Image 1 (tube, rainbow, N blue to C red):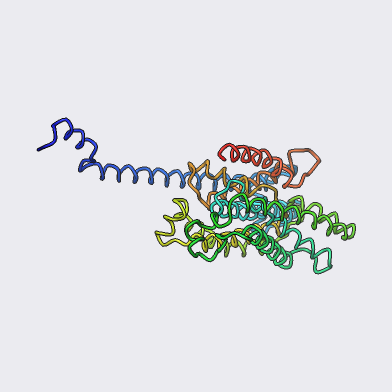
Image 2: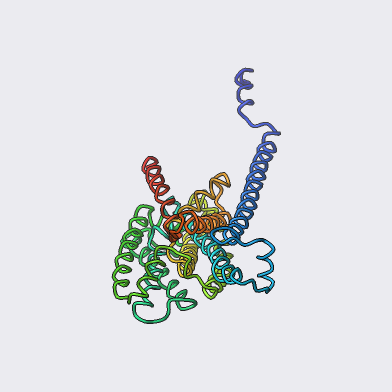
Length: 381
């Protein structure tokens, strides 16, 4: 017996018609196209903002430089007074701020996507503090002048050591703590193996320990080194040199492309650990590599400018807001660069004769954001 006409009509209505699949596919493609356009627009806008910010940092302020004079100086012409200020103070600060901000921003994006926690940032989890301890330790033990390649190597070692300690404590005693990409790590990803709260608490504990060690190390410095270290640990571009800039640039040329590839490979994990594992992704291994590269980026930036507070934490949510929630490492890196360059200009020029360390302003801006993220995370929980 055939079904009643009304029931057959309702069944056919609930079944997608022949045009439904193409229409759905077209809608998905339109959404992806719009997302790509927004991503491209955000990238271009931030690139323009960075160039303008660096121009303002170099040309304006207490000592102004005209555009023709600036290009004449770059061309090799010597202008009394202006040449020294541009080449030895303003331009190095602008370039170092952009490079360090990009490193911090990219590191924040890698930590955030790997651990899937809004508070997952190298400046919260002890990475930058570990890098600072190692760099200041060079001065405390007379191992070097604290500049150039020696400080960069020490900071890289310190940042990686802090990351390893956090990983060790956060996975200790956990049955799903294997990070090699096996079943547990592959199905739950690195974030599932670690547990968001466990990793955050371990990171904050290591950061606090590093801060205590840093304070003790600074007490052993002589008066001259103590003053320099105090300004540097606040996050300052005062002592930046072209040697540090070259070292930082070389490290970023290697680390940023590697970080970009790892960040893209973590995309399947956004769909869930089990689905990512079914698609052939290994979020455990990829995430461990992403954390390593992120730690190196943050440590390299710290070696050049000091532990710049909350730049990594600020960059990622700002970047996601500009891209409509889509994770993007280049946008996060550009956000970090713009934040540091603008903060350095304001710290040097907006308070009259008082020239504040750049990290003071980034910390003042990042503290309210961190409190807001804590409140929002508590509400979601």
